[in-house]
Image (cartoon, rainbow, N blue to C red):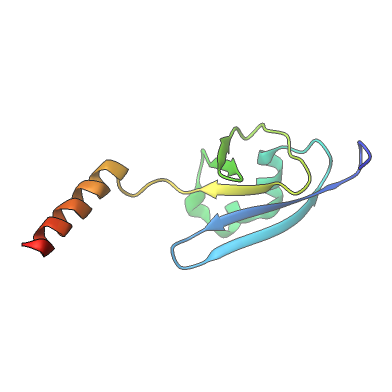
Length: 99
């Protein structure tokens, strides 16, 4: 790949009932924030708001992160429940079933 050649990336936003994948071609040196804006996901999903957290292949990255060809940018949703509380509830439910 030449230094100024455009690169291909994906921007993904997963909801409980569906997943939206936007394939993009962006200029070399583009950032996560630029790809997110180009994807149009903020317009389609106003609940994203700001600030948005993103990951590339599951690794949290800053919005200023430069992209490489083939990167999969994942838009992270805020947690609805604390993971520890979720485990407590699951354990309590399991105990209740075994009684």
